Length: 118
Image: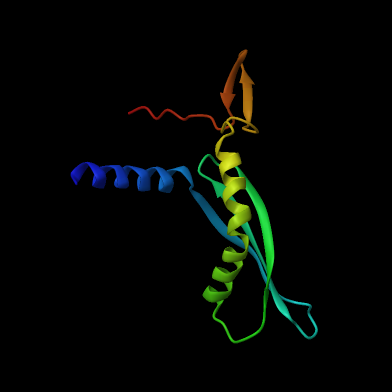
């Protein structure tokens, strides 16, 4: 019984850790401006390796909903598209599109380290 429990916990941890993203609401507005029929909701999605993309959807105004409910409906509409895109981005190196500078013939990250002496 302990082995089965440990296997289930390990599988759950793998699923949880293999798909991680952060969403930022970047668009949230009634549309069209005159006589609105829906909300346009957009998210910036950031994978754990720093890569990001934008995705949006429409949420119909069919009953009174809170902002949180509208955002949840938008996410539910997009989840099937977000998950494979995040998985694709997670497979890419975090070094792609990273800023480097050349200093004395060597590559360095775009932010210089500062050494503070005591």
